[in-house]
Image 1 (spheres, rainbow, N blue to C red):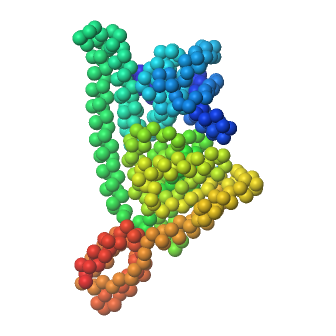
Image 2 (cartoon, rainbow, N blue to C red; image 1 turned 90 degrees about the vertical axis):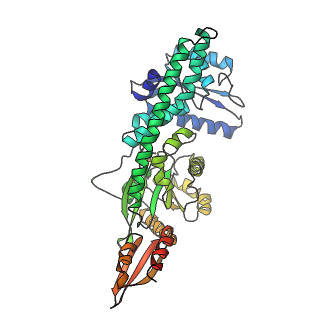
Image 3 (cartoon, helix red, strand yellow; image 1 turned 135 degrees about the vertical axis):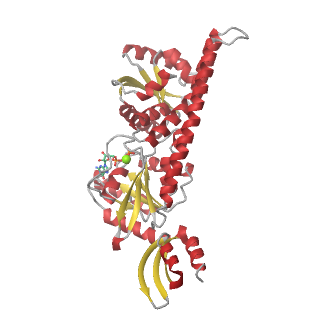
Length: 435
Ligand SMILES: Nc1nc2c(ncn2[C@@H]2O[C@H](COP(=O)(O)OP(=O)(O)OP(=O)(O)O)[C@@H](O)[C@H]2O)c(=O)[nH]1
Ligand SMILES: [Mg+2]
């Protein structure tokens, strides 16, 4: 088990690698799509520290249960692996434990599937205690079934009938260890989550909390840097996948001295391992608890429509798909006039969409206006009169919304208050105590 973990943890001189994918449909659009998916896998592999020497694809309706590819194709792959001295083969799908073991035996080199590769990248990029805990949990849960079957296989070979082979004893020890560790990590994450909930509660008077969501590398962090500029600490921006793994929250100024909180967080990708989404719940809770989502899209990417669908799907998994959402089409500086004209369709589907360039600072004011419009929709303004004998209510209202004007009479204080809809009931209950 140590060895397996080490592959994830240590980074390592660049690895000589090959990519493998199957193409399920033979028409040209599907083939084109497959090529672009493979391009993305190459980008992921590059981020993880691998040099791609060649790519292998095979057309077949579905993966082979035992070897993922057909027998002949695996032999061809083996030859090229030896010829080009490749030490790692990466598959564009999640391999079953059986496929993984068989391929390892057949090819005699390290095998990584798409999930393993993404986990590997996350592991090497995690910096905070929270991110490290989450990724370790995802890795162990991913490894557990794979470890079991591989070892069971060994124990069948080496263990006598009715007795436990050395392999089986080993696997039981390892499994117990992993399970204990998983339980420990879950408790630790529970504690971290608790602390965060407390922190969030203490700022419930915020008018609206906004979260940036989107596919990886679309410019979410760049947008946070322009929306909530802070000269002392720029958020990390890089032309690589998964530059951001932690949630960063900043205060953003709107008009009339109003403020709101904006959170930047981890990006999504197609076929994101389910275990990873589940264990990143703490980081992604910023998305789940936000009042408004800014869905950032990279219009310069030919795959942007598919990426939008992936984001929608992931949001649905997180049960955050019903929130008010502003569509933000980024990187418009990179597209030609002709391509821009082609966006008509998108404009008619999303009439409130905003087109920007976070990199060049284009369209930012327009975006801020749209944010204010949605915030206003999500909140309401009331004027209340509170007897001075109940003045403590006035100070508690400060915790639930934004107090504007305040005038005193001899017996009363009159307040105008803007409250987010989520706090409506609490305000009503509080006011009832003064009636
Ligand atoms: N040309 C251009 N490049 C941009 C724009 N916005 C961001 N970029 C570039 O796109 C790359 C990714 O930007 P990030 O802000 O790191 O993207 P992200 O969505 O936070 O990415 P992850 O955190 O990796 O998911 C960087 O190289 C940015 O400089 C833009 O409006 N125009
Ligand atoms: Mg980022």
